[in-house]
Image 1: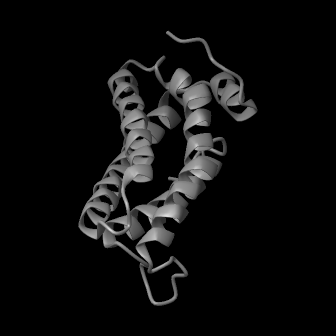
Image 2 (image 1 turned 180 degrees about the vertical axis):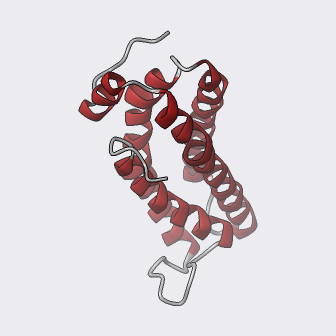
Length: 155
């Protein structure tokens, strides 16, 4: 089933973040054609840049539009609570990368792997559970508000 048009930009961003998650879990490029750095310090810097420029704005959009719309669906309330908690944990783990030196390769690789796994779990919960539920349950007016980026009242 194709995504609702209001979710397509988020799903595209999810794809890019899943690529990052795979890189983090592997501790480097995903293929020989991947231009992801091999050097751990360069990976750490690129990961933090991606977090600041891509993930933080994405989280803000979800918190402002998607989650407030979804909490009006009874079956989505616990999912949204889990996703919000994951946002906080993901942000905490990204921020912790600031304090891990690339010289401590085992610690950094473990942090990368765990963060990659959490990102993967988080995105799959949104894509496979929350978004289909929203597509079945939300009204046209709710979709219009999401598309327009308006804040929806909390339940």
